[in-house]
Image 1 (cartoon, rainbow, N blue to C red):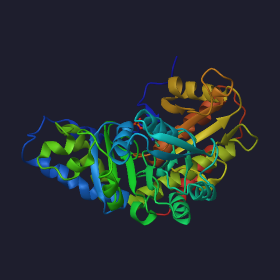
Image 2 (image 1 turned 90 degrees about the horizontal axis):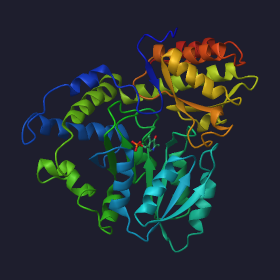
Image 3 (image 1 turned 90 degrees about the vertical axis):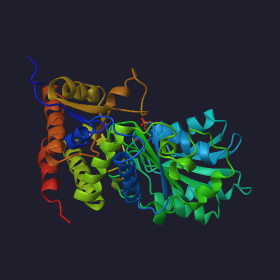
Image 4 (image 1 turned 60 degrees about the vertical axis):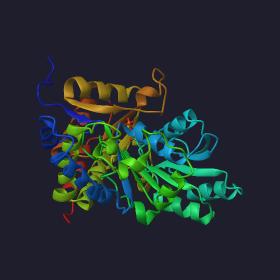
Length: 401
Ligand SMILES: *Cc1c(COP(=O)(O)O)cnc(C)c1O
């Protein structure tokens, strides 16, 4: 008989666990969309979204997932025939490049493989070689959710500057926003995009583009479509222009509540520190379990690891057994390996991911690790003991601000 009769937990890297308060904020009738609370509530989101990205630049909200923000950013900045450079450290920047190709944009890829961050020196070399400045944009992710690598965005900006290149710098922070430090203005990011369903703790269906003056200027040279054009969303003549149609009413109530929690109750810097502690707790568990090679980190260098998601590797077959036991007996859903191997191949069942982004606390992190620990015992997967002990020591040592 299964033991799985309690509340289940999602530990996948998005959609993440939504706070009950955020869910409850949605449970209300549709509001007046012409005047009153919805309009003031929507306007109140802008300063919090700017503070979330650490920018004074404008922000546009789209009804759509992260892919919508990918397409919107490209549609506002580039024309068919333009060239962009995709800096790939996993799967997601390539996905963005695929959207660019579908719009007729020429895509060049600077590839760093599935186990490493972008090397800024190689980025600078590639841009220096582009003497005619054919490359109009550099597209990358802060955190790649497949490999769980975290790129050094400030260093990448430094590489673009060192090459004296004028390309726009576009960064996807869908996995990292609200979880890992990001300073859009200080780091010189021209366009930053994110979505609601990961660190922002809101149901999937909203995405965001933040942009600086350089990006606003570049838009004038492109020919954005009615729907994707960010200008009317940022400076709407009528409220319905903000969403090119009906506002995502209940989603906006949800987002307001999530930002209340993240920006005004916990505080962004505290959220970053919390994610750092939980990530280090998970790493400590993996190091203890896997000192004989049973389980290991996809990203070896700690400095290059995400604090929002961990991509892990096991002996052949073990990852699939762990995920399966956790899903059907343990009450926790873990992430599948993504992009690291093809389904059905022997490598496929050697990868899994733990999402530790957004609405998390020590009990949730220890529950996920406890289920994995139990799964390894139940499935006779050789591992060293001490993983849970190592994780709880890291959490216990968390320094309050
Ligand atoms: C989740 C994710 C996406 C895709 O977002 P969707 O909402 O599924 O379109 C893109 N980039 C990164 C880094 C992500 O983590």
